[in-house]
Image 1 (cartoon, rainbow, N blue to C red):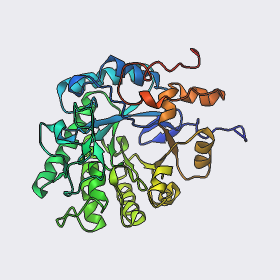
Image 2: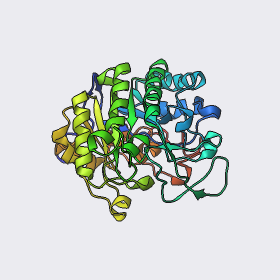
Image 3: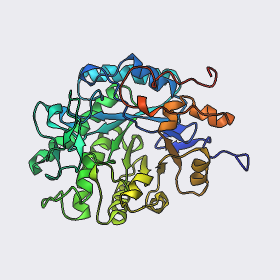
Image 4: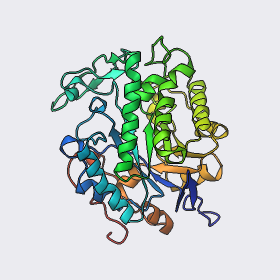
Length: 365
């Protein structure tokens, strides 16, 4: 670095964990779970290789069968899935790492073929404009109009998250992150493009945030506030998302999460695609005064940009996605000023070890 001191590679306290660096491995769907959404030895090796991250956040992991939206993604609702994830956490811990499980429910970002013909659920019956690949299909079809969850059903979905948090503890994780971003179920309740409800979960910002906050409270009831985080994407347009006043909506939400005292909130900044699709560019720094604990920045950061956002005081840690895919020892490479492997997008989703566990480390290159 220009001043010879790396903020990114310095220690940070997140919740009650002292992390050796401020580099978080982002949750990334890789579509390589085994039958029944069960992780296996290949997944354990993938995460083990990346244990040098200050903290690993697992790929999105469904809390129920109705939460599935993609093929070969893992779950956390059966004994077999818990045993599979135990392989992963044991491998990460043996390598000196720390790992949180990301609790996930796709909601309307799915298709009835994933659920035995049962429609996906959402806050309201609003379909995603676009197409989806049905389970087992080779082509695409338009997204279906989801079924709106009845008010009486919502407590049961919150309990699925609670049970997922309990099973994550059984599987040996160090904590959990709630996936509240990218247009998945909590986001579908939060943003008014998808929430047209008139009950206590719709209308006002306070009502639209209620589902996410109840899920967060459920996770805190299992883990305590020091081991729970939330991921949000205020500027995201992926999966047909948007809000009439994202600054107001997400400022309220982050402030409410601050009141819960969560370990961290991770904020996804606007991407070039979001801006092309008319998204409001809500800067990460605008949330800094609203959240008193760890704020994590995410969006295609490289080393220099990550150092800059940390030294400007806009965030406390930075999460990296594609760079961790291609560079299992990313913190060591940054520390050494070494070159980086180039990610191969063709192998991001699905497949075998190629493009998954075969990227070389520094001592292998």
